[in-house]
Image (tube, rainbow, N blue to C red; front, side):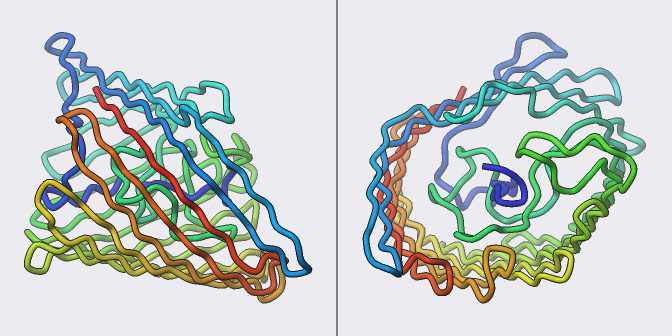
Amino acid sequence: MTTPSMKKLGAMAIGASLALTSSADIEINDNLSLYGYVTATASNFSEDYTGGGDSDTGLLEVDSMKIQLTGTYDKTVGVVSLHAFSDYEPVFLDMYATYSIDEASSLTFGKFLSYHGYEAFDWPNMLQISYSNDLAGFIPAYHSGIRYDYSADGFSAGVAVLDSVYGPTYYEGDHDLGDVGFEAFIKYSTDTSNFYLGIANDGDSDTTMFDFWADTTIGGTLVAAEFMTADANGADAYFWSLLAMPDFGAFTTTFRLSGGEDDTAGPGAEFMKYTISPGMAITDNLFFLAEYSYTEFDNTGVDSASYLAAQIVFTF
């Protein structure tokens, strides 16, 4: 998984409406705390090809892990994390320090996750297992730089200057300051709703991306929508996603419909994806999630794809 094809599972928590696992840090002392997770997934992925033929792949694997150490010293918070996917060696993921200027604003230096994307980077924060966009995608992941953030009275905003918006892999930018990247966002939140608008511009790839998402809770049901559009050196792309997660008490079920077009994946490449994903909390630290998704494609060489999976998430 690489960026921009890496779908940023970006950390946008929905709050108390989610029946997800506990993510309280383990306090080591007054200054240090530890957090982590491990996920294991059994899955089957099949494709039917346009010219005939098909493929079928089944996997059982420990597919991600993360250990994160947070240090708090007066007005400064430092974060370092070690992360791995099943097809990547462990890497240092988060490596940054945040200095609080005042109660509403802060400066962050180092390597950190992009602002953008409704779906979370860390699997414990996901509402399902797979991601909305089954084509290339332009939601960034990790990069290095400096950012300024502001938050007060339900309004938040941020701007970042980066080595690059997109890098050669999910866990870092390109380290080159010849053509820097920029990203920014504004967000308004109430007790039950969030509205987000973000922009990113990457000088290296000549890519400009806009991301809008909103969510609200209606009678115990979480409803969310996202729309992303991008221009990558003259090639256009967009995707949209609609999601609903009713409150079933001890159980959660995510219903999602998503679609889009991406000329970087091929001229006129399009998809439409249907997803259902039930889950339940077994304990405060152990969560089970299942998913079935069916995707229809046009102009990609694939007619359709099916994904069936079950996942265990353990947090500490």
